[in-house]
Image (tube, one colour):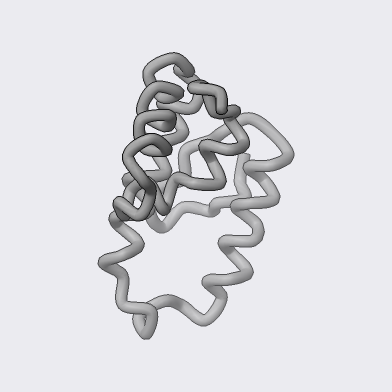
Length: 94
């Protein structure tokens, strides 16, 4: 087994890593990858922040169009360079 995980493997296991559901070797592999890969390090910091903040959200308080807006954000993210979305802003605006 290789010590270095690939970027796509890391992305697939981030929530398990944050929650501590991985074994010691898998966690070590993730930490090593994050140490070596600056792109994944940035992604991880963003993912961890969102993951932790979403855990504090009461789902009953989400607006009715939440799924639609999040789908638009994801589509925009997949199609182009990252842009910052501020609260109350239009997530689809360039």
